[in-house]
Length: 203
Image 1: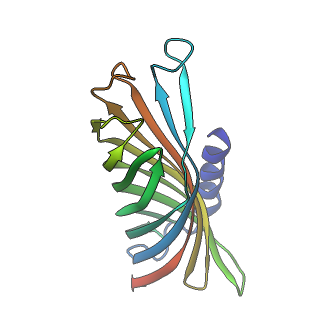
Image 2 (image 1 turned 180 degrees about the vertical axis):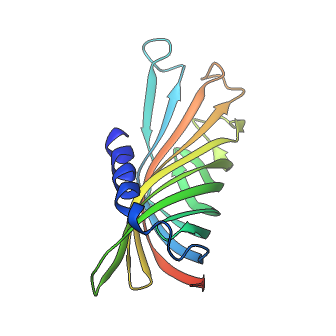
Image 3 (image 1 turned 135 degrees about the vertical axis):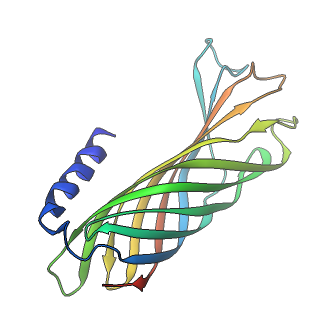
């Protein structure tokens, strides 16, 4: 986390000389991703050896994600925006689940003097995640609350193509279970995104 925040800070500093130029641009990104190394992290689980111990369960499969984002460039090298993504068909035990996240995003971006790479950027997201489940988890139907969504990542623009790596966290709570005592639930995953940027307004 500290390294990522330092990277964001350095990108902002690098972009300061051009902050006053070309503000007002508007772009729309469409991305498809592959989610991997996903974990459900339970707190206060019945099978934990100690109270308040975190219990990790690895996702049974990788998943595909789809994401759209709209960005307004306040300055040439700093944009803010909003978007939504969906994680398709994750599975653990006999429970299938997916997430839909809506979020606000901020993206400092450093322009590159290269014929191939247009820019590199960091990105931070915060929003609300909605979980949908079907099937059973250890023969139990879980009642899971929706909750906070956070995403951190870094990426690059090659011409108008986007390549991006994200780390995201969804926070949830389990309301009723024979295995849990109102357990906090955290879902973490890495996502490798590829996509395309459409420049709607380009001053």
